[in-house]
Image (cartoon, rainbow, N blue to C red; front, side):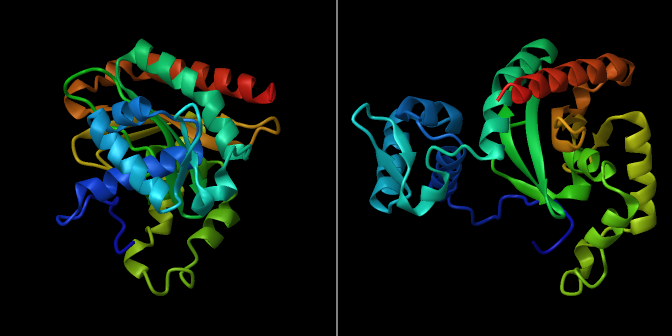
Length: 258
């Protein structure tokens, strides 16, 4: 990444390539998807989804079984029928993300942190015409996302210092956040128990997020709701945070049953 801004689609983005890569991510995280499911998730015609999947099969990114479902191919074989923590977390969270969307009428996301970046591992869009679209598979700087702030706030101060050590950012100094400001921000998030992101990741978008914790109490993911800023009502923030905490608790309970 070349800046601290979230990754926006380049002007030269090839739509078909973007769709194929998103389909590959879906297979890697989930597997067992049909043409219709891929088409619906990508928002394309079944014929388009079929061509994309056949290309992935040809290039060994996917395989098709006798029931005409698609799974990760040899190139993604490490994720085939994955029982990794990420895939289990995603599977446990998806029903709760859908219920959350039904309750609040806005798009919901589940995000994990890897170093100083965050990856959206699950997204459920709301049905409103004006909505925040799926972020599934996207990677952003951790300090620029709602879930990233929640997850960074769970770290010890020395862990944050090490993560953003100037030597690690020697070749990308423009990506390194201002540490005093970040420490203050993380302190507020930690005390409040949630993060509010008003235009930090993307202009015109507001997001609210809370942590999802493991059995030991460590934050392993961030659960967030995103909405166009024109629909954000700060008077509804407290009940929204309470709803998010309940959904996070339900995900935690399901994960403990794995």
